[in-house]
Image (tube, rainbow, N blue to C red; front, side, top):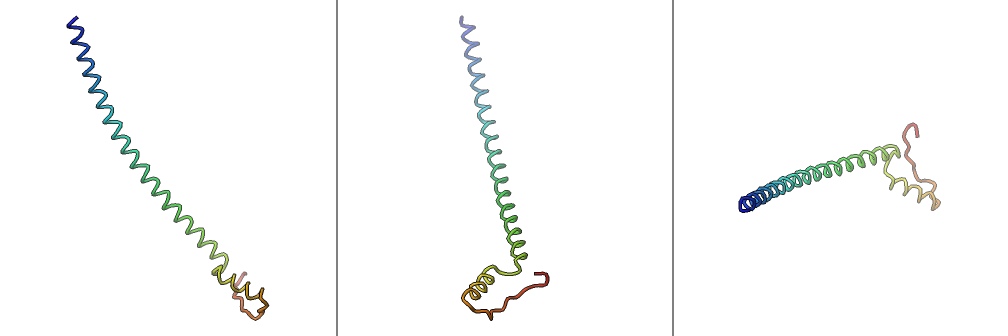
Length: 92
């Protein structure tokens, strides 16, 4: 019976050590994955900003000028000022 108890104690110690090793491994994996996800999220945000900037510039280029200037011209025409100059580009 003492031999059995000694083996059971040895097994419990072995399992304890395995659990501690598994915990350390899991903590290291969690830390690595967390860092990778943070980097991917930062890259996604930067790509989103770059895409939004490119789309905005493309739209402004298609409008042919600043939307505020077009709005001001339209407001003056709506108020009856038909002498306002509207600048257009070839192909407009």
